[in-house]
Length: 217
Image (cartoon, rainbow, N blue to C red):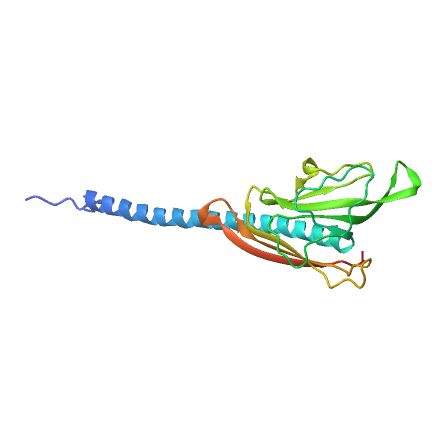
């Protein structure tokens, strides 16, 4: 008579098919999780890039607005104007109510310096902005002896992530009271474009700002 061994382990392990199915399910779940994680990273990068770039553009527009608001003698040439040392700007001249896509604007800032250190011959320092090479650029005099030419300008908006598809300037002013008196001009800027170099991370923007000159020319 054979007595069965009650201590014998009768539990069975996983079969090969069960292992394959388990691994397949794990791989599917892992792929979905990794995809969601990468999507979160892309959205986070997009958010930071958009925020930094929009802040950069807003800073540039705020800077322009503040300086133009207290500036005078808006002069808008058709191309880069060379301002020689110790010279004054030409008379105010900006195309009235015309949207320009490649534009230049020069003006007297609120800063005053002395010509050759002589207190009897002060000068108003000239600032200039232009939209060219697909970005906003600025040039400014530090002293009356400074020259402003095409190489004086430097970008104030990074071109690494920002692409402008539209950048117009419009200067509006009423009819002058007399031939020697100009009314206070009103400048409008409109910028359209996108932030980001990759198609899936592009964010589009449409920004407008207006500046009313505080002092008459």
